[in-house]
Length: 538
Image 1 (spheres, rainbow, N blue to C red):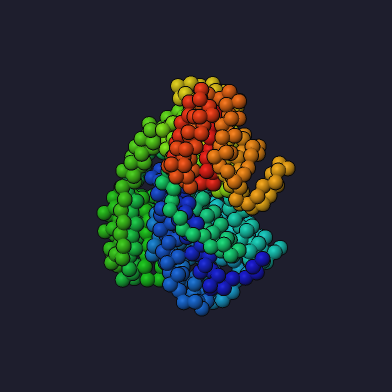
Image 2: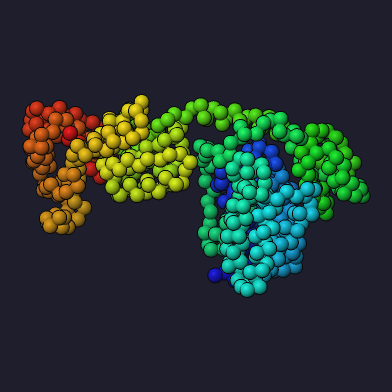
C-alpha cells in the first residue's frame, strides 16, 4: 500500500477525482433537491473539479505537494460553481493551508488536511446545514484523524475515509427533511464520495477515463414533489470580485445575509468569491462593486430551472409504457427481426462475445417502460442479465432464452395487452417447443461429447448436443432436414450468417424444402457471426 504522496501523486489524484465526478454527474444531478430542487449539483461539481484538473495537467512535472495543493485550491476557487462547488473549493483550500511547506504527506498529514478543509468550509458557510456535503466531509475527516493514530499508511487512511463517507452519505436522507421527503441522499455528499473514490483509485494506479454521460439516467428524486413556489429566493447569484479596496469582506457577508440564503463567502488573498440565493441579485452585485471590480458574474433563475426539470420528468413519465423488451443479439438481419417484433433496446453480443451486466443494464435504463423483459438468447448470458435486477428501479424479468431462435419464438408469443404472468407462461411454454440448430465450424481438433472433431469441419448442434460434423456442408444440412422432418416440425426458419453468400443460402433453403415438403421454410439474411446457419424448427 502507498505510504505517502508527493506533488505528482496529488496532481494525479485531483485529475482522477475530476474524471470520476464527470462520469457520475448525471446521477448526482438527479439527487439534487437541496437547498433547491434545480438538478445541477453534478454539473456544478464537475465544472469545479474540471478547473482544478486542467490546472494539474498544466503543472510542471516536478511540482511539490504544497504548490500542487495550492494551485488546485486556487483553480477550484476561481472555477467554483454553485453551492456545492464553492464548498468543494473550500475543502481543498483548507487542505492546501494544512499542507503548506510540505513536500510529502503520510496518512496522518492527509487526515489532518481533510479536517482543516472541513474547518475552513464550516467557517465560510453562513448557516451550515447538516445532511449535506459538509456532514459527509466532517464525519469522514473526524474518523480519518482518529484512525491515523492507529495506522499512518496513506492509502489505508484514504480507503478508511471513503468508507466512512459512504456511511455518512447513507445517513443524510434521515438528517435533512428535504432529502427525506424526496427519499434520496445528498447530491453534494455523493459528489464528495466520488471525489474520494477517484483519489483512492489514483493511488492504486487506476486511471479513470472520462466517458460520455448517460443521457438516459432516470431521476432518483421526484422533482414534482416540490413546488416552484417553495423556492424562497429565486436567483442563484455567483461572482468573483477583484479586491481593490480595504473594506472588510465580513461586512459584505452581513449584507448578503439580509437579502438571501445559501450564502458562502470566501475571502481570498486577491479576490472575494461569493455564492448566494437571493431575490435581488442587482442589490448583491451593487454592494459587491464597492469592494472592487468583477472578474466573473453568473445569475441563474432557479424557479425556471425547477419548472423545466418538472416538465422534463412529466414528459418522461408520459412516454413510459407498461412493457419494454431488451434483447441480446448480433447480426443486422437478426436485429431487424427482433426490432420488427417490438424490441426496444439491444445489447450487442452472443456466443464468444458476451455483453457485460453494464451493457445490458444500460439498455434496460434506456427503455421507456415500467417492466422490462430481457432476452439473453444465450445460456452464458442469462446470469449476467439476472445481475441487473437489483441494479435498477425498473421491474426486470429475465426470460431464460438460451438461443436466438428461442428469443424470437418467445417474442411471437408475447402480448402487450396480457398480464405479466400470462405472458411469462406463454413465452416459457413456447421456448420448450422450439428446436434450435446451430451450424458452425471447428477451430481446432477436439473431442465433443466423445466424438472426434477435426479442425475445419462443419459442426452442427441440435438443441445444444452434437448432431454431426464433416467436410460436406450440403450433406450435413440434408441430415439436419431429415431429423427436423422426423421430429414433426411444421415451421423452419433459416438465418444465414455473415459468411454465407446469397446463392449458398438459397441452396440451403432448397435442401430443407426438398426434405421437408410438408413444412413451411423461411430464409432470412441474419448476418450473424460464428454460425453459418441458425435454424429454428417448430
